[in-house]
Image (tube, rainbow, N blue to C red; front, side, top):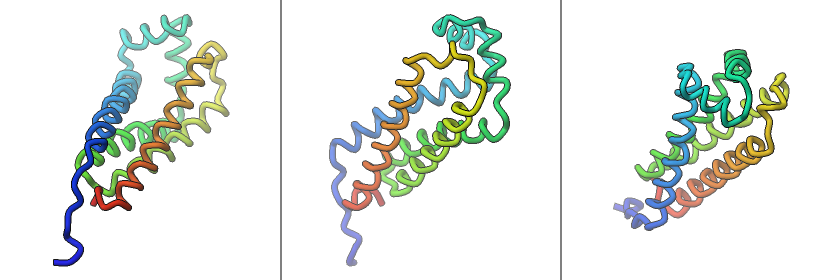
Length: 152
């Protein structure tokens, strides 16, 4: 049969897939702990930001439904993309694009909301930029591996 020849899986797919899954699992953990209002986790976040717990609770509790939806899309799209990379599915690219859309929506909310200055530290801004860069790189990687016939 023509066109059914399977391309060998390059070693870097396993490395990038596993590392991206670990990276995105951190975001998933943060999302679940924040959404479930895990007080120990939120207290730790407040302590790390050197702000009162009430400030963290007020900010995240004030997210409108649309911002929560974009946050979920960003997180779970990235986790799904990582899993789909490991499954060698061409849909990894689409999942990462969904994640980028989620990140864009979450960023739009963050920029337009009344986020307390204390929660907008240089580290938080740097980390948010790193999330965008990593997700864009993963989408590019997935697209390249699809074009090379590695992802089907």
